[in-house]
Image 1 (cartoon, rainbow, N blue to C red):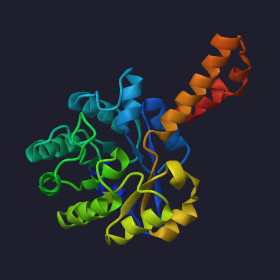
Image 2 (image 1 turned 60 degrees about the horizontal axis):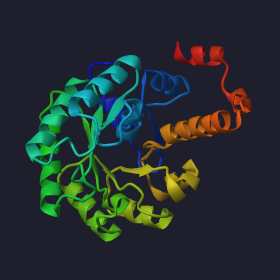
Image 3 (image 1 turned 60 degrees about the vertical axis):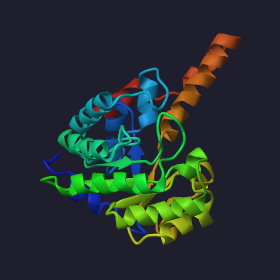
Image 4 (image 1 turned 90 degrees about the vertical axis):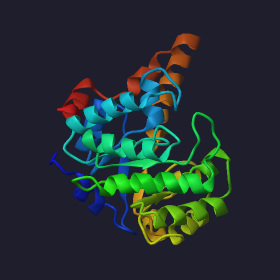
Length: 269
């Protein structure tokens, strides 16, 4: 990894030609994604929390930064950070989070408008001020840094799509590099998100949107497709199913479907 992963990461954000941003949760998944052809990877707040035996939102900023720095050191491609609400309501806290994330070697981070640890959203004006502060901190860095602004209210049930569109337009005006509305609805709703800005839009491949092939995301004008915690939850689903069979019925046949150890080793080297 060069000292500045920002330009390479920014260059991946091509409107109508989306790349897949693979959300990983440890060094093994990071290296596997890289070996399989990922052009960039990202953290996932909930997937990482799972590894610590915690729920999403229960991991500190220091822990998140240390995790991100370890991933940066594990691969030679850009790493982006899922940094929740910036780890504080205050705009200056968001700005400091940007500076710390850049110091950890990240190519960029996303900041959402959820008033954690609850599920409500910050008031509109405060949400915009937080992104303005994060953008100002990013632009003051000695290197490039991709700041993604998330409007999470549709996902959390705090507001509707109309409010999400209003917010991403304001985040765009505040200088965010990429806009993101997780789970806006169907493809038509995603098209409204893309149409609300001329900047790159991130789409989350979950729910009905997971049924869309890359070509349809491209046709909609999406620039980036992320996975969130979906890959981690898929893994946990396999663990749950296997343990239920083994501990409930004494059936170990599910263990026959895994990758060979040598194949895994080869991907990690």
